[in-house]
Structure formats: C-alpha cells, structure tokens
Length: 140
Image (cartoon, rainbow, N blue to C red; front, top):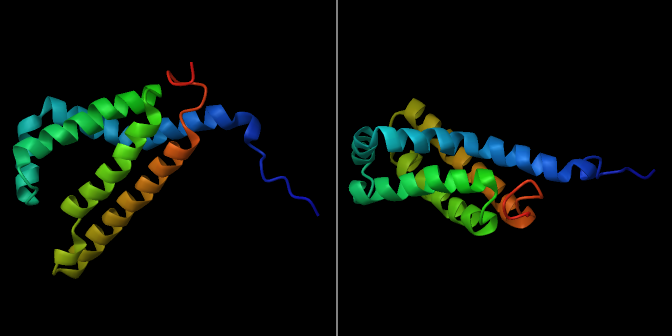
C-alpha cells in the first residue's frame, strides 16, 4: 500500500511561515521585555551567574529581539537560525543548569527547561535546512 507522506507539500511555504511565527513568539516576547526592562534582565543574569551580565544582556537582546524580528520577516533566515541554534543551547546551559540543582523539584524543572531548549534548537536546525519559504524577505 502506497502512503502519501507529503500531504502538506502544497502548503509548505504557509506552514514554514506558521512555524517561524510559532517558534519566535517566545523570543519576541522576551526580547521585547529585555529592551523595555533591561535592568531587571541584567539582575536575572547576575542571579544565574551568567558571564559578564552587562555584555550578555546586550547579546541576548540583540539575538532575541532583533534576530527574532529578522527571522519573523524571513530576512537572512539560514544564518540567523544557525545563530539561534547555538544561542538557545547556550541559554539552556547558563539558565537551566539542572546538574547544579540539589532540590529534586528544582532539578526536574531545570531538566525539563534545558531539554526544551534542546528541542527548540532542533526547530531552528529545521529552519536552517528548509529556509524561510516564499512568504519572506529572503523569498523575494
């Protein structure tokens, strides 16, 4: 029996746009909060022992807010998605270091969040592979 596995092939570009929107809701929201309440973000980075919180906060703001907007618009999609792969794994290592948690509940929560970052990075890898689709600035 032949099974058609490409049921959505005709909707490929629309689904890539939806995927770009879905994966970037998180980054757009937090990137916006980093721009509008930068001092709280720097304080948070200090609380998780991030390296050079003042510099890290600027990098995070640039990646999440401006990189998020670029990906949403489909501008320089593949290289920016590759940056997000590395960035998202890095934020998992810095912000969700479950290996340091002693309390079992905290360990579990950080473990889950760390591996969510790993999974999101997989989505960015797919974006690197697929590109932005035709509904993008790159597609024009």
